[in-house]
Image (cartoon, rainbow, N blue to C red):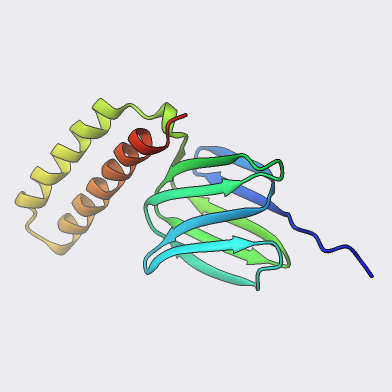
Length: 140
């Protein structure tokens, strides 16, 4: 009987860099309808990624977190690919800058005149709040 694999190749790619490329035993990503967990042997699928905290466990048991923006996750034949606009380690986040960005986004929401302006300000606010949460709750 063949031994069952408990890890899978995981690639997390942001617009400006490869954030992670290696083996993982699990990954949890925020989707528009909630958190989604993926483990070895997961069925093929694709889903939207919403701004939030992404977590992944390496084969040695270490858990890492990242603040990610909108994107997509794809599971295909055991490989997991996550493409996002941005991905940051919590320790690398400038909280003061994120707080300023959140305040600016709240003002933009109040002043928005169109659906497009409202959605852009909402996305900016969501990203800033995710960055603040990641730094405060997951910084090692």
